[in-house]
Length: 392
Image (cartoon, rainbow, N blue to C red):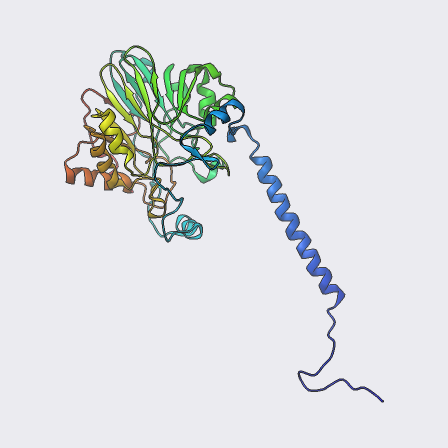
């Protein structure tokens, strides 16, 4: 009997895959896996650079683990604080950041500035000089104070992704005098800059920061004896008449993939003549009212204003919320920072200050908004101009 294969569609027969097609599929899979492995190795090698710092270990880690603010292997906010708000996801955040249609996310030309000679300041003056974003210098009651300095021109480990705006880098570490107190609010790249602090190292008297951040600093060669690292709600007596109280913020920390291994702080700085709130980064929450009741009123509250978005509104305040925070703190005036130097969110570069000042005017709340480098008299702060207006 002779067997004839069926001629109609659907008939029974064996179809063999050519050997060459199987080989091509295997080769493609090998190439794909190899690329992924090489990428992982490259990322791992890249992140071994000193600038990524060090995670806490040993006695420091034991102290962290004993903190009431450390649970489930990480520091926690006082209120539940999801990374993203309801309805947002990392795909939409990525899409909005890189493909949004927001115009003027960077200024079209150099921003105006003034350069104050910090090395020749009258030691009897109480002054503040803002360097853009969250970096500023204060001379108060004879002490020189520096907060979250970033002078490297970038705010991330990939420098090309977060370059500073033209005109905002008029200061270098050479322009900074010997510093009595350096405050580091948390270890994010736009607040703790490896290049900057290394260059400033010979000029720094004491560093005041949060639990865990000292692991980075010691890894970079700083003497442990000059570092004061604290949890929330601790008091730090300094020189005569100078006291710092650490306070909560609503944010997070981390320089790599592992987050919240160091705590994020705000500071209450009490000097012989002034009471100043150094806000660091924070979303709006009840802690502002608690701090205001315990330590207010404040002569000045320095609060973050910028790099916000509705998708992460729990960790960065919207501009209008600054005014509410200032009222809660019982502050006499607010100075907004965290804007005018880096693009870290998909909003126009001047939207933060425009929205904030509009809300402050509506509520008749006093504010300070100096241009970068301008000397501000803390005894009688005066706004000379709304300098950002007219800049595209």
